[in-house]
Length: 177
View 1: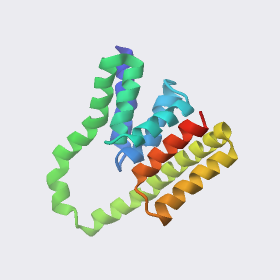
View 2: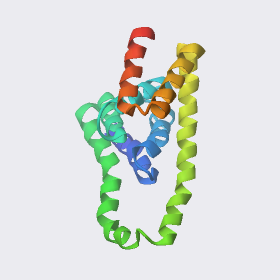
View 3: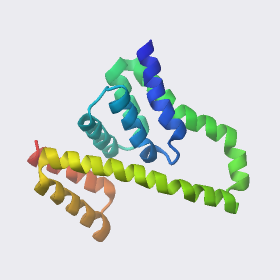
């Protein structure tokens, strides 16, 4: 029972403070799952994140379901999914009328712009950690090849991110396994 409570807290806290959705809460989830409770290593978390990115749907809920299943089976999935979806659902139900009323107000826009920088920093730190981990596991040449190829495909050739992710997964399965 204590494990279910820990699972709930591990995903409820990022759900409350992770303004900006799944991508913004990923570093917070990583801290809870890897550092606080030790359910996964950083590498395992990175693999779960890669898989969650490759599948359709919200990233945080897929990660929550996986971690919940690994730790406590079906009750763990229920606890983590409720913890992940609950804060957003409650906020949407309680604040929808207020947000719709003031969405174009200059102060609301300014407040939202202030939150963008911390989210960018959190995602940048997470990306750097994964880059270093990839460098250590796959080597500098492989890591740079995948990073440069993904950047070119996304920015220069405007390939859809899903295709780049699937291509990276196939490349990894063939050349890095």
